[in-house]
Length: 43
Figure: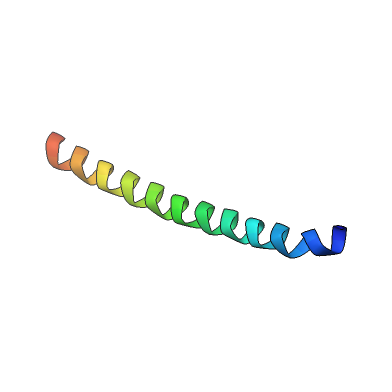
């Protein structure tokens, strides 16, 4: 049972890490864009 459920757990873990990586990249892009927009708006 444990050995058969291990590959699915690894797959889920890989997808979660991929989602975290994509979300971190998106958050970084959003923050950089918002800072650029604020700079353009203020100065």
